[in-house]
Amino acid sequence: MYPNMRAGFMLIVVIGSLTLLLTAPATALETGGLGGEITVGAIYFSGRPSQLVVGDDNATVTRLASQADRETMTDADLSGKLHYRLPELGTTLYVSAANGSADLDCGVRQSMGPAGVIDLALQYGIDEVWRDPYVTNVKRRTTEVETVGLRLRYEEIYGTGAFLSATASGVDVAQDLSGDRRQQLRRDGELYAFHFGYRLALGDHAELTTSLGVDSQDLQGAANASDGVGAEVTYGWQRGPWLFETAVGVHYSEYRAEHPSFGKTRKATGYEGSAMMGYIAPFGWTPLTLYGLVGYARSDENIAFFDAEGWMTGVGVGLSF
Image 1 (tube, helix red, strand yellow):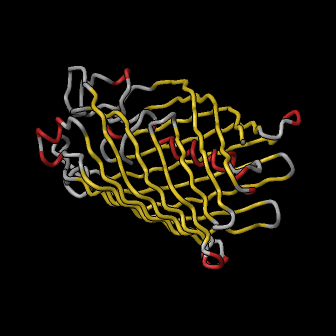
Image 2 (cartoon, one colour; image 1 turned 180 degrees about the horizontal axis):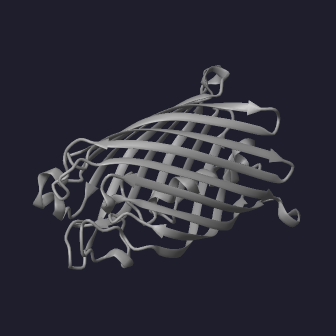
Image 3 (tube, one colour; image 1 turned 30 degrees about the vertical axis):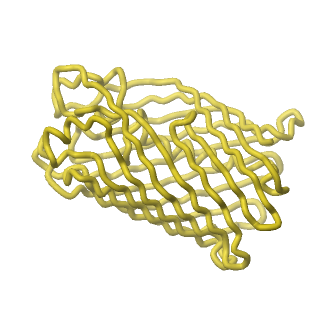
């Protein structure tokens, strides 16, 4: 997954668990006009990140054959969404931010009547990566990586639970010293992903969602370019004020060329799972939802430098308006 964030392989666990939370209370999204959601929480992480992930504990690498040290981290989680709905047109305009303001979506959601719903969004992300991840015995320095792209979703296809999603993004690393040193390691390029899935209602209170996807990191450096396939299953349940969601996923990637620093071509298999419990309107405060979540993720590679695994837990509150 790219770009690499601190404990970044946990990001899908967190965002996937919060999806149910953010859509639980009734807001202006259903009634028309201006509305939104804000989620504030705290997350505790413990694990071993990839050596690609920026962190104080692994700023210096003594041997490329070594894994990163285990670490623990407590961090705040801040996410939000602002939307404006025009019921007479079946149109919703929205902007959303995750992890503060580092990841932004700005889009439009349009009902197509019995044909379904189209959701088109412009996406922007900025993060830190190492200028050269593969230098040893010196303190590595960071640089910024920007990702700009478009995401198209087609949901409720002709009244069914089927949905499609396609994403295309461009990646630019400000100071890619490893790529300047060796062309095979360049990290600028394009990212593509396509997913197909189906939501199946299980009675009046539960839903099962399955999805399959393919992705391509078409980067200028062949050793960092990859092609992957993945699958995810999510089960959600709501009864009265109580919400529950659990998800499991698996992903496999193969890279296109031998990595010059390790003499072999990367292969990676990732696993993740999460569970979230929420409670709507505690103490009669209708706009609020309390939540707690736990998740685990692991990436096994044929090169130890890139291995990662860890678990996280978190609590927080969501406010709808």
